Image 1 (cartoon, helix red, strand yellow):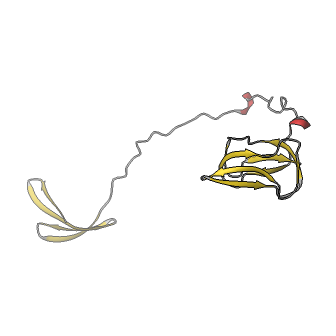
Image 2: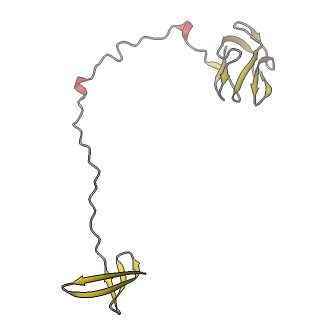
Length: 148
């Protein structure tokens, strides 16, 4: 309950605010109870409104597609990859580019949380590229090998 003192045209008023619910308030003015409706001041935003001029695409260069060339076959990544099953650092790489492997062969040892984890081949194939050399920190699902 809040108490206020007002002086209006030389007359003093003691106002006790009993309860406020939304726009309705229960007051007591000099001992007489009143139920009043509160009209709140509409607050204006002090945040400036940013007005931008419209951007025209006529000035944009049209050369983006002209400078693009296809990637050479030798530089294209292999469509088949072996990804890291967990984050860690490469402790030991057992294979090198050009090596063939069979399903279940050891390809790499990955250290994660002070444990050595063997990365085994899931299919038969040949190593095309090693993307994670020894000592490299890798994230989960990062490509370790490109294979064919």
